[in-house]
Image (cartoon, rainbow, N blue to C red):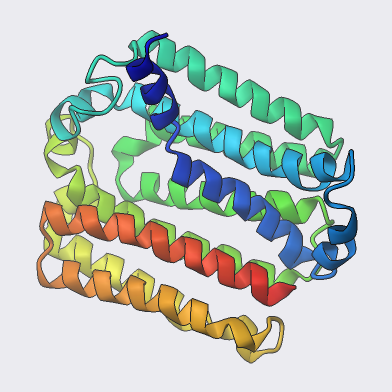
Length: 295
């Protein structure tokens, strides 16, 4: 395997997204049992404890997310030829069939690790996540908002997966976190529809941007993210999370609102591309805040 193909093989799994899904699993663990980290920390770097407590749950989220990302690029080959011709598959850096096998192997590894933790509920959640991701790519993507909702649903599953390993303790802040993840990712998917308008329209994919226009899509994305921002303070106000970490949340919320307003003012493809990437940064900051505030 030459250097270019190796880089493309790593790039296609979208490291930032997949790492965030792994982190989301750990945050689900922590939110569900706030004492977990403090109790576990002294033994985290012991021989087996680190692998069992941190590494395996993280890798389940990482590999299943990576699988769905690769499969998405496999299915979206024709769209990417128009919208993103420099992606690994349309650029010819990775054969399309190789991408399919790669996605399947990543899914098998993720599910094997999930089974290794011997928790039936968590295995069911992991299975439902990868099935939902594959169904979206095969059938639901062309259904517009239904496809967007399916993607947003899959983004809450890492939190639920992590929480299931702790038997869903401390449910309210977990519920709020899942609701925030759902709203922010639904908003991001709508924004991505603006980015992908040309290719989506050519292949008959009925995104909000294509059926209702860029202005409507940017307004809907703004309304959804605004609701998420308002609700994000609830666990802090009610005393479930440490209020001292609110500045991190404020920074995340400012990024969400600022770039949503930029897109609202000018819903161009360029602004939509920038906004969806900044949303990812804001999501990471929000995850960091919830994790630290729950310790």
